[in-house]
Length: 337
Image (cartoon, rainbow, N blue to C red; front, side):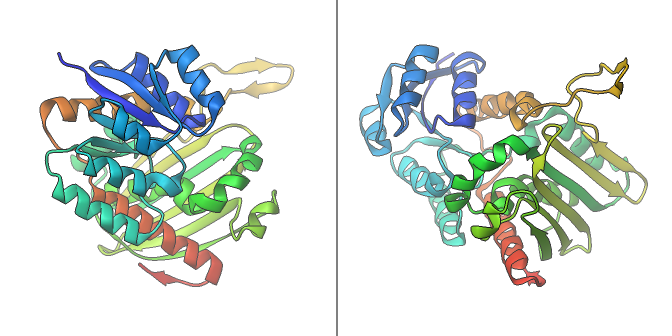
C-alpha cells in the first residue's frame, strides 16, 4: 500500500496529539513535515517523532516539502487561509474545527472545495467518529427512539485550562465557536435539520477576564430548528472534576444518553471518603478513539478516492450558528439564523 505523505501545521496541545497519531497509529501515512512558529514545538517534532522536514513558514512548507496532504491544527484564525493555500497547490486537506471564523471564509472554502473535486477535504468534527456517538446515530437512523425532537449537549473543559484559553479567545472566535461548535454539529446530525433561531445567555462567573474580552466561561443556548425540533447547548470552561462532555437525544419513542457520567473507567472506589468514580481529564482522553478514527478516515478517503461524509457545508453551518449564538449572547436577544 502506498503511503500518503503528510505535513502538519500547528503543534500545540491538540496538534501534538494529531502528529503522534499520524506518525504512529494511522496506517498508510508518512508524516514527513511539520510547521510551527515556535522552535520548541519543532524541537519536539524532531526528538519525539523524528519528523525530517521542519518549517516555521507554512508557505515554505507547501513550496518545499514533497507532500500529498496537509493536516491543519493551527490557531482557528489561520484555518481558512491555510486550507485555501493547500487546495490551490493540489493537496488534500484536513482542517480542525472551526473551518472558518467568518461566513466569508467559509463561503470561500466551499467554492474552493467544489472547484477541486479530486481532493479530499475533511473537517475535524471528531465526535462523529467516536464509537458511542456513531452507535447512537445508527440507532437514531433505525428509528429506535422514534422521531428525535430534542438534543441536549454540553462541552465542559477542565478549569485549570481556563487561563490558558484567555489568549486564544482573542482570535479563536470565543466560547461558542471554540467549544459549542461540536454540539452544534451533533444537533444538526441527530435532528436532520438546520438551526432556525438561537437564544444564548451566560457570563464570566469564575474568570472575569473572559468578560473583558466579550466572552464567557459558562453559557447556555436554546436553539430551534427548521423542522420544529429543539436543542439545548451548553458550555463551561470551569469544570473542576474533569472533561465533561455528554449528549442526550430525545425522541418520540425513547431517549439515548451518551457519556452522561464522564467515567475514566468502570471502577468505583468505596472508602472512608465515600463512593468515588474517577473522570476523564481532558477532551483528548475522552475522544482518543475518535481522533484516531478520523485520521484513518482521512487517509482512507485519499487512498480510495472518495469524499468524506462531513462536507464544507457542515463546517459553514456550524460557524454560522456559532456566530449567531455569540451575537445572541452579546445582544441578549433571539437571533434568526
